Length: 144
Image (cartoon, rainbow, N blue to C red; front, side, top):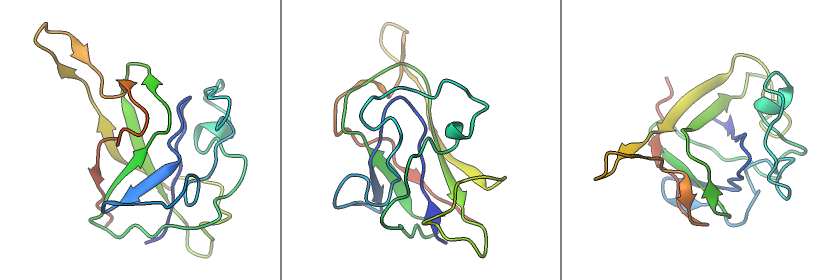
């Protein structure tokens, strides 16, 4: 299965890792988001930006086989508490991952980064104050 990989957040995750192998450079198979430099978040959740927040297509396409483990690398510190949701989109038959815009009921969740409880009984979110280049939670992809 070929997938079009997208993220939508004020933080950017420009490098995909599949089964332990990272993209060779940022934005190679992950589409560069409109906020790659500004880090501004999506302001209107009803806009098409909520699904891709993209200004261009990626130069390459990654193949993510069923059962693969995937995660992303962030290149800046992440400073917000809250869940991080991971989604992939299945590119419809007859479409190309290079040009597909992510529209339609094609998205499926592959994971959620949830909080843990520290010794003081406070919630600790995985993405809160993460350092740059921190590998995000690896998620096993099951595609059926």
